[in-house]
Length: 407
Image (cartoon, rainbow, N blue to C red):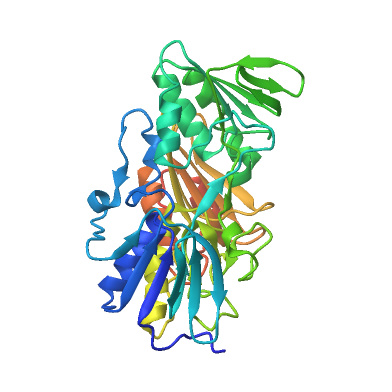
């Protein structure tokens, strides 16, 4: 089968989060007049997830996408409490199985996102991925309460800072050598360690949790951490169990897609966007999902693919982007650093600074992370707007008074 689907008159979008809702909006914005069915699992209209951690205590109702991004599903076939249970691909159509019956369409867009990891035996641990999760966690925080956060990644750090600021006694347990080590490496991650004490948070690195009980957490060395709540913030996995081998999956369970967001081998009739998708970027190579910006922008690529609307230069290639407000600091990063890249720091590591990752022994820049330096954020956005990795003078990159400007 050709990878370019033709005569698309009906589309089923599976997943009613940001990626799914944006896919519906992108199709309608591109002039699609056929039928669209949107399937969701939570039973509520689409909302934005970042505020669940960043504004856990200050925003107690969901950030509805209708209000945040103007995404209006009125008039659409939105089945928000009808999750998909399977997928069947035929030569000229695709069928999505649900408990209410099968839905046949010319094309399907998979946008089921990711699900938080809860280690075996941690049944009393909370996770944070849905509005209901946020409500459950919020109810256990406040003055006189104790919280153990397992994992010092993006979500764990954000929640720790918000909870501590509200008077909760917070302990963060991180198995790695430093916070954010998986995302930015141990050297840059270690620069965030002082933030925890400054925010009144106890940080334990190189520590693992052996058990979670209704009374708290038990470390591998048998130290007990009493808590009113334990939050498992140890990562997410693509929510693809419902696909049951119907499409190729990567080793992490993600749906492998090409640059046009098409799933190979499906005749262009199955696409995937957002956290669930792993695409190949001409600039960065394989990009796993997990970036809010991907969920926002990849639907435009998928819609253009289904509508045959890509220009002569092919589909867009948005750079990976992540931002975080944590422990009193604003972080933003563009690109994707790799283990072994050369790290160059600019600014004061004890204050506002920026990390620049270079391809070893070259002037090619793989990623930029800025802490409390908004000008460098704007510069990084421009750097990664081109078709290839940008080039920077390393000496200039290390000088915080000189702009980050491509050579």
